[in-house]
Length: 254
Image 1 (cartoon, rainbow, N blue to C red):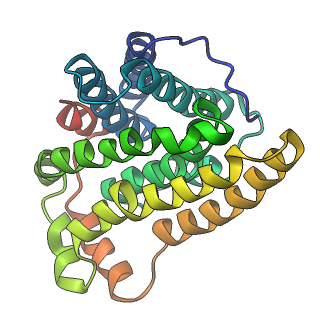
Image 2 (image 1 turned 180 degrees about the vertical axis):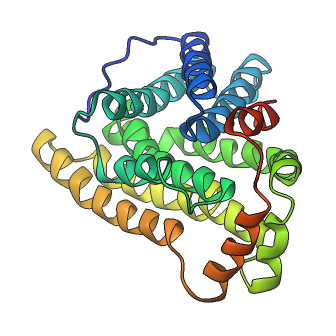
């Protein structure tokens, strides 16, 4: 389960595979396409950044990106085949088949599973042992890249979820939610987990993944079913999310 089974070897391979996932989700009206589109947008930006020389080690960043992406693509394949997968992705994927979560929640669930769990594993596999510290600058440079994309993502969500910014008024702070899970806190969690994983034996590695997976899955449950004023605010937002799934997917696409 923890070794990617997809054959993608380059970022171009990854983007082509994501395109197929998105096309399938759009055709079948699957909400799994929401995160797939967001992830494709990010991957395209990473490819541009590598070509522009933005990272210290472009080839290493491409290896990281491919290992990272293969974990998501492997997970969604497992889900469609009804095979066993991590608890983190199971939580995110199950939400796509239920009514309550709003568009933003679907995006955050995917971000949480992929960044908090998969990114830690991918970083440790890309730069194991004493190689990991040398990856840190490029690892966090993606934080800056993601931050640059936030305003556009929010504008696109506005088009298909007119009331999603009501979260600001019930104490959720939309900007802080997105940044905390997608950029700041999630990447810090992933880096600390990568530091632990990078120096472990294979047996310890698997045990640590299982432990960390449970933590991330619990976080996902909180994203999926928040209580209090935030939960009430989400119900109001949901009332205005009336666009068909394929329209939402197309709107989120860069």
